[in-house]
Image 1: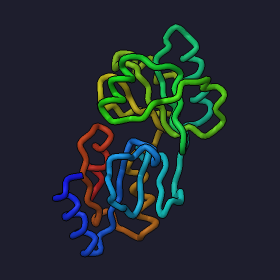
Image 2 (image 1 turned 120 degrees about the vertical axis):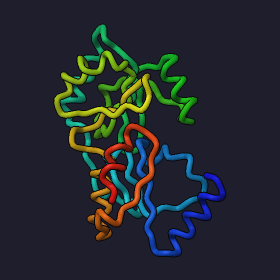
Image 3 (image 1 turned 135 degrees about the vertical axis):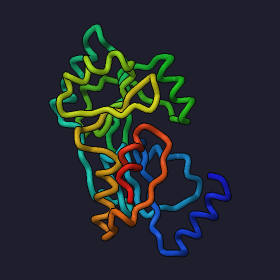
Length: 198
C-alpha cells in the first residue's frame, strides 16, 4: 500500500468513516494490505463476511453443486479447480495456468489432494476453464454463478452472492445507509459493488 493511501485512510478514520475490504480472497489469503487495519472484511466475493473476526454473513456453495463439480472433474473435461473453504484451499491438480495466476496475484502454494475427502463448506471455486467452456460446465451447477476477471479462470460462488450481499450485511450490522457507501474497485468482480454503492 503506498504511503499516500495510508495517509488518506487515516484521514477517513479521523472523520469517523468506517473502512472495509471487499475481496475475492478468503481472509487468510488477504496478504497485500501491509499493517493497515480495517473495520471488516467482505471475503470470497461476498460469500463470507467478517467483523471483529466474527462471521456476520456466509453462504456456501450447495453440496449438490460441489458433488456435480466432483463428477465433472472425474470426467474427460477435467480442469484445475481450487476449492476455497473458510480457512483452507485445496486443488485437484495444478498446471501452467495455475502457476501463472499464482505468480500474478502472489498466491501461496496450493495443496493438491482428493477433493472428495473435504467435508467443510466450500464458499468458492477458482475454476480454470476457458470462457468457451463456461456455459457447458455452469449449466451443471444450477445453484452457482461466475465472475471472471482473467481469461484463464472464473470465480464460482453460490447464486445470489456477490460483494454487494456482503456489503449489505456490513451496512445492516453497523446501521449504514446505501447512499453513505463509497466503493472503489478495478476488477470484473467489483462491477455490481460499484453500481450498488451510493
